[in-house]
Length: 97
Image 1 (cartoon, rainbow, N blue to C red):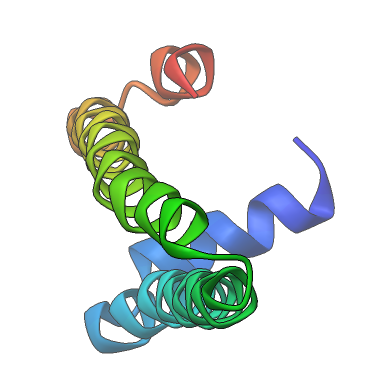
Image 2: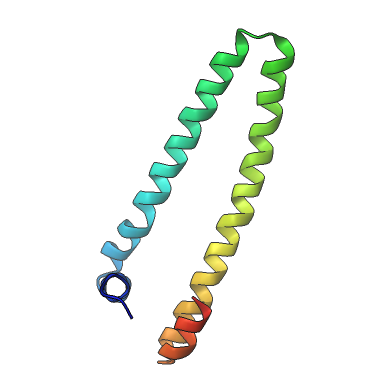
């Protein structure tokens, strides 16, 4: 296993507060970037007319639905990996990852 993977594993298995922070900060940053991008799209498209603004307003919820599916898959994968690590089966956890 690489040094980065070892460090990440140590972070996740160490202090739970630090692990939650390590996982939540990148997610929060990505959501902020997406919201800023959606706001910029809506602002720019508002000058193009009602149809363009409607298109942006329609696609944003669809994007968030797809994002929710991705987050669900990520949570499921995390649960599988953490369960295998909890059983002490590191080889299977690496395989699942």
